[in-house]
Image 1 (cartoon, rainbow, N blue to C red):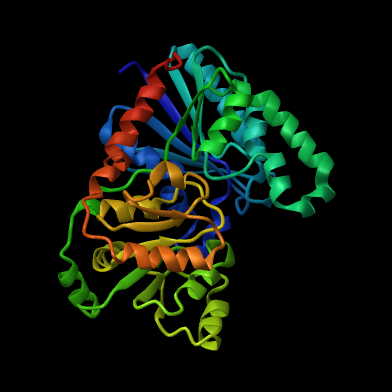
Image 2 (image 1 turned 45 degrees about the vertical axis):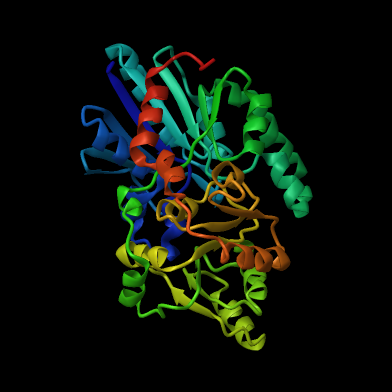
Length: 398
């Protein structure tokens, strides 16, 4: 391997997720997508020099710490409105210093940025003093281009001049990016128009090997105290309106199965009250569940349902398929890149309780299939291998 240094960057403050129950700022930073990728890269390629950088609105000074032989640098933000609208000038200054140092030492510097539809991304590309030794790779996290946000949220017309300026910067600056990792066909088509000379491909997070270990369904049910002869459906995710929870609850009316909802969120109380009011008795809100117990539920159930209104490339779909669990998911984001109708599961249109009901009845009638093999491409060793190839290769694939 040629001498490489990788700086993996998050575009948003970790403190924006403090209410998720994932821990403190440092822990969230380590477990964010950019931190996980860095750790997996270091595990597979120990000689690789890699750092993780992020902005933080709650910090007044830079903080540096190490974990798993990776240096984490957290810089104080200068300006934050909401996720995606954050600016951190100290990070840009430090990046340009790293670029000079890499040039002096003749080291190839990889700047790997997570989420590119963001103000911080525009700022980096605008002020970065890129050299021939520098390569910029970016990972989509499900964000939309400015005009895409305008089409979805009409209220943004009030900020039309700002949105037009943001779109101008995307059109201008995206040509500086060497490699895009996108989370869906629509995003890929958009990028092909904006950065035709860049490499663009679909890439998700990876999943751990533990998800591929098959646990006997009856054993898992006994462990969890579930009935052996009952049909169980599973939802894992945030409990909020945009996850399609209302349609899911309505779709459960009259279904001869029980729905288990794992997760918490701002609308949990509202939907628990709604299910009581509507007398929907075949559902159970379980709250947040992690680690081995979550694996037990994936092993114990008959189907996973993800009826979201919007998504990127949901990790929970990969986890379910790796557990040989068929899925029902809405046609949003990169879902159709992950699930083929009749193979790993059923893809339905968003916001349709009828489609949810019909697909549940259909999938519960399926004979057992070997769908686990379709999750092999999501193993971290495969994601890391492809990422390293992009780090090292300076030519666009034919």
